Amino acid sequence: MRFDILSLFPEMFSSPFAGSIIGKVCAKGLIEIHVHDIRAYAPGKHRVTDDAPYGGGGGMVMKVEPIDRALAALAVKPGEGTVILLTPQGRPFRQKTAVELASCPRLVLICGHYEGVDERVREYLVDDELSLGDFILTGGEPAAMAVVDAVARLVPGVLGNSESARADTFSFGLLEHPQYTRPQEYRGWTVPEVLVNGNHRDIENWRRRQSLLRTWQRRPELLEDAELSAADRLLLAEIQAGEKKDRKRAD
Image (cartoon, rainbow, N blue to C red):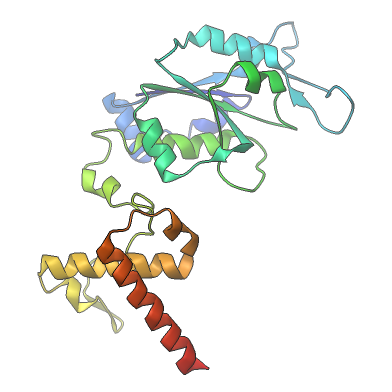
């Protein structure tokens, strides 16, 4: 899989992508990451990439021409790649979005800056717009890093254990269950007995219950779209009933 990133500050990507899993899988050829300086595609001696907005107002707007030239140089053919603008106005980037994008052979990520980009970039040059959330960053570079990391780890062969990605938080619309490792006891803090008794069915049931409980307590809105079986719904009803009893006792 190939990632192309268009940025005004390409040097920001050298360190994050050089280490950890991303750097290793790039070296193995499982994914490719190419960062392109938008200024290199700006016309004129001064390589101007932004200008004041028509109609007045504060800030500067990224020009359409350098971005169009950069995309033309990349020669992304229809059906072979998806061009994405990273912007606070985009649709929310979720785990299911990462799963969708992981099936694309090539992603082109455009990092916005300043007061945004010329609207003609949205209208004529991109296929999608993504946002990390309802907050403003100084630019789209951190968002591009997050998208690359979230998508790349889903590419076959990137993670040593495919179960790691399958069981991730949000993969089924729920928060992940608690995780423990050795030692079994530390400072009197112990691992739940069910996880060390060797009964895989008990472990699976405990993890599912904990996942439902944690989601109900921390992100209840996720349950509206989560993939829940009939058994899950019964278990969730038990959890909710237990929570109500605990509140009454506390009162």
